[in-house]
Image (cartoon, rainbow, N blue to C red; front, side, top):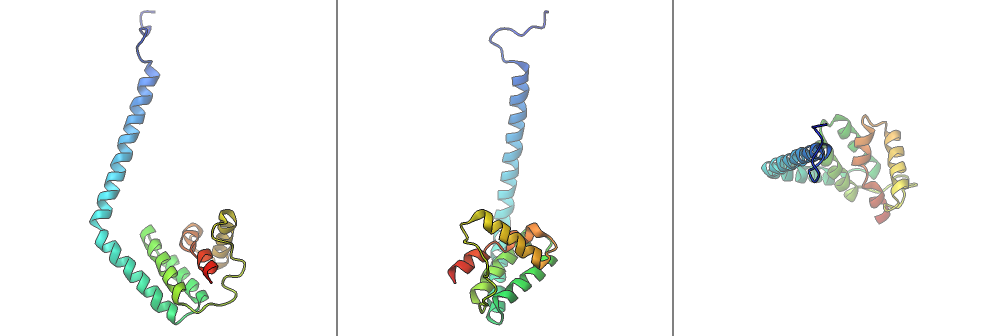
Length: 152
């Protein structure tokens, strides 16, 4: 009975909760700061890689169809090893579709880009039909197709 908390003092559970929250915020800030430093250190490399992938996409698209762009994207995606590779491949596809010859079946059943649920379901169907090695990476990579189809 002598260990009762004094009136007006902070309960022990609240002290523990505030410490845990403070440590969590400190860890998050450290991660954000580290990511920011990494991106700044690799900014030129990332910019050059993006330009290269866009240029490759434009060149490939000039001699291909939109379906050919998707097949090449799938080949590259299955060989990719990182999220940064996947970002570059998405840039490749976007540029490739911009210069490729359109085919009528490519945009068949493509939903409006602002229809979120139908778009996600359509992207999953496309990636399933492609038999993508990593379906989640595939849906992230090909998510610009509905917007491309809407512009045609």
